[in-house]
Amino acid sequence: MATNANAALVLAFEEGCMSDVETCRSLGYYPRAFVQMVNEHGAVQTARRLLSDSHWPDGFTRLWEMGHHELTLEAYIHNHPEFHEFFTPQQLAECDDRLTQVGYL
Image (cartoon, helix red, strand yellow):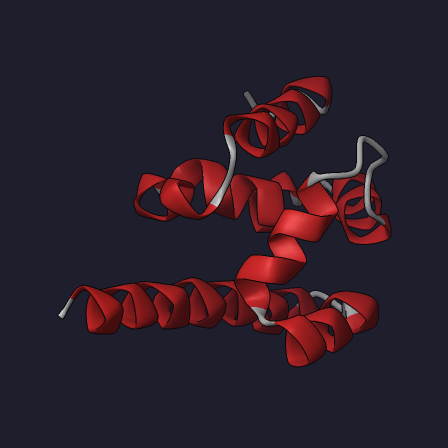
């Protein structure tokens, strides 16, 4: 049962990320590298990889330049505590640090 619940949570995370990708597309930005990573590694592993690097991912920078911080992976994770269990305290701190630097938090 716990495995099914975890699988459902992983799926919900991926669906939420891809929903934000569609919103980005409607704004004229297609985060191709992010989508490729999700297709190869899944959304949770992709997010872990991106949050384990202290450098801002290109997509984060692009969305910041567009004034759409709310569509970043970091904002999605921050705004959905039900997914926090997928990430280490350091990854969550990196998430909040990036969002603080751009004035989202």
